[in-house]
Length: 372
Image (cartoon, rainbow, N blue to C red; front, side):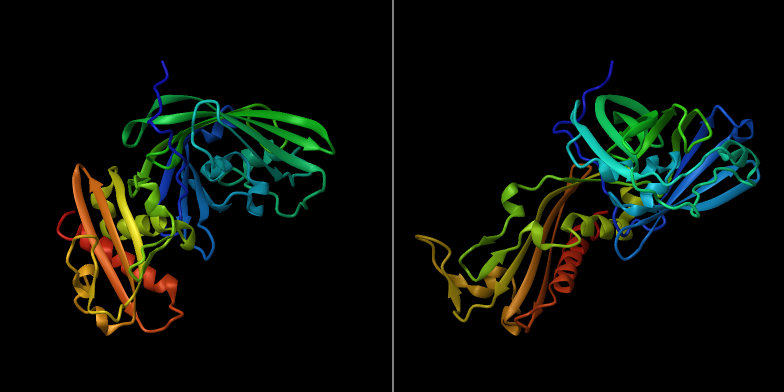
């Protein structure tokens, strides 16, 4: 029987900048050519200015080749010439909670003009898998349309043991000038805790693939990822003027988003110690503070005023007219870790991205110091 998914239904993990060097290795099984038996695909992330670049290394026996898969971002033009190894890009298109019955749709261009020689090329190519045909131009009216649905949740064997994975069935329709030329059916098992497709099966004869059946299984991830779960209260994600000279910043003001920055820094500072663990973000709040001229501030009705420095927890508050303060609370293995970072500045037009990142990194460092 399929297992129930975690509650609430998780979303796909969008790997972000900072995952540079992480590798996912899959065993590959095909119905033909026979020379591909025992083949593997190893994907790797590489940082770029906009979104990670994905490359893959295809190995069979003593032969190997490395090719660029594309940009890890939904709708990127690089997805147009992806053959079956493009299954690795699936998470970027899963933009809704993974409830049973949830549907997803997307499409890419279909640039392959003729695939008569694919079987021969894949059989005889030095390492195999002629990844794309870059000399062929895109043609109007040619597209691959993807229709996906979450069918159920299963327990699937992974490098971390059995994990809950969404079983997602995908119908790929090859369309030319309004006419269906071919249909393939893929089944993917996506494990949110690993942020990856852990198993995939392709069945059907299509114009841009020589094999009629292809199956892959994830057998290794290096370094092992950790799961980052956003457990913040909704009020911590919206802008709020607190009326005391400070304003809480909204999630929408951050690019890249705060959780991506937290995950990136945790991976850099404590990745090996967090491998395979669940990291829960209970609190992540950023304040903009204007230093008050008054010596003290009212706490509330019936309470005595306290020094402004004590109220904001900043003994050196008056050294700067403006501050960015970040507070974070994390849970790992039932242990709570809290930290706070603060950056003062003098300009009324702050370098927001830099000030925020410095405050956030300071908060994370204090949270994990001596506790991980």
